[in-house]
Length: 160
Image 1 (spheres, helix red, strand yellow):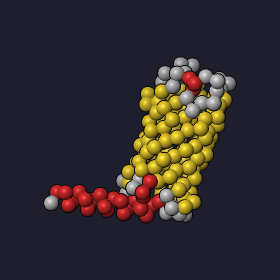
Image 2 (cartoon, helix red, strand yellow):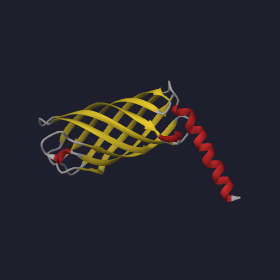
Image 3 (cartoon, one colour):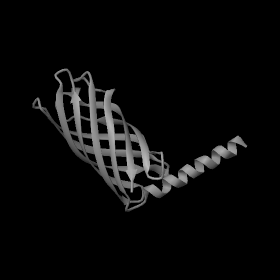
Image 4 (cartoon, helix red, strand yellow):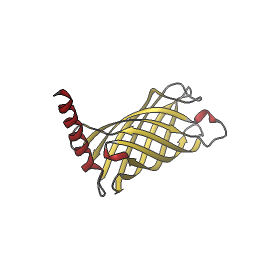
């Protein structure tokens, strides 16, 4: 009996997630990065925030725009980033693969273009609100690989 209830619960979660990844849906989200959950060779402590907006151009395929702020490093660099990317939701179950490219500008003269990838899960708290943990990697195009970053983001999203 316990297995049947768990199977039905999983089925209901899949069905409720299915409706959110349809063409024409609008997405708004925010995430918190850092808190020592990101690492690269150039900084010690990192805390950052991102705001995202997206549009489902096809079922399971979203285009995203994002803007972010990071307070990072030994020298307390203030970094602003602006980017665009996309997400593909696998089998309409909430797991997503993302790719993006960001322009990064810091107050200490640091400028970079950083393509990246991420994998995450959109866990639905209600019919439209999600909790979205994800692992990400941003590749620095600078000569040094110290600025390439791997980390964990915790975010939330609203699908309208």
